Structures are given as C-alpha cells and as structure tokens.
Image (cartoon, rainbow, N blue to C red; front, side, top):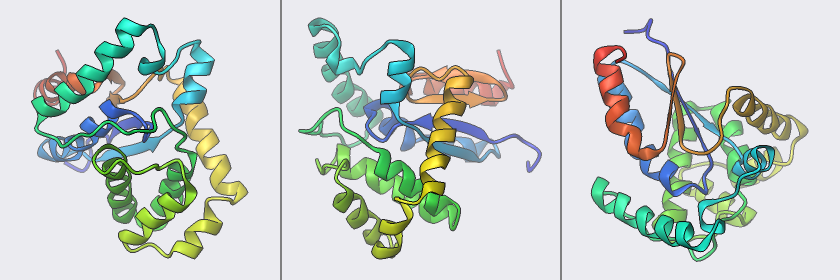
Length: 203
C-alpha cells in the first residue's frame, strides 16, 4: 500500500464545494491505501489568471443557482452547512498558517484545516480576519503568538505563492481540484467518480 501515490487535493478555504469534499476525501482515500496531500491556494489569483470569478459574483441566475446548490449538496452529503454572511472572502492567513503547521506536524495541520472550514461554513466566522485564524489555531492546540509571527514570514508567504504557481501550471482553474495518478477531477460532485477510479484503477 505504501507504493501508491498520494492524492492531491487543491482548494481554497473559501470554497463551499471544497469544504464538502474535505469532509470525505481523507476517509475515502484511506479505504484504498492512499494518503491525501492538501494544498490550500488562493482562488482570487487563479480566477484572475483565467479571467473567471467566484460563482456568486457571476450573472444573477448562476449566482442564485450556486447558492441553492451549495446548501442542497451539503444536505445530500449529510454535512452541516450555513452559508457565511461574508462571502467570498480572503483566506491567505489561513493558507499560510496551514503550510507552517504542515511543516511541523501534518496531523495538526489537518485538524486546523478542518477547523477553519467548519468555522466558516458551519459557525459563520470571518476567517479572513487574522485574529479569527489565530483563535481557530489556538483551539486545536497551536501557540497563538508563534503562529502570528510565522504567517508574516517571507518563507511562508513564498511557500503559498509557490503552491499557487504550481496549481496554475498544472491547470487548476477552481476548487476543489483533485488529481489522482495524473487524472484531474473538479468539484465535490465528482466524489463517486473518484471512488470508482480508485476502485478500478481508472476507467
């Protein structure tokens, strides 16, 4: 099982569909002896590079449909969901914090990531605020002052920039974007296809 390549999961903490997939992807991968590499990125930069925009900022019918589908998809998957009052929003502080934590303790970084997603999409907390990110980190056992300094470090800022550049280079255009053995899947609704792909080794 150890020779199976990890699954890459590209996401922005502000993506409702990425939140939904984040609640399922690790357990699914584990059933097939896979690990998942989480890659928080900044969709604002991705959209700018591709001439796109968040779903809720597109034309009115598409925006209205998207809002309906976020909640419906969550109900279908049995995942708690409350659309945030502030949306879309910036997530660079959460993404930087993740990468710093990941370099120290992968499991802790994963707990932090889940806590950020749930704070935004269940508890309606403004994760664009640095103090909110620090409070979330503290709630999972991270030293608040140490993290506050780390997210402003040039090294962590550069790490996030590199991840965004890598995402663009492999064709990421939105989130969630999952890559399994070179095969890309876009959207939480691709979870059944991901499961079939892992089951059969491709189709």
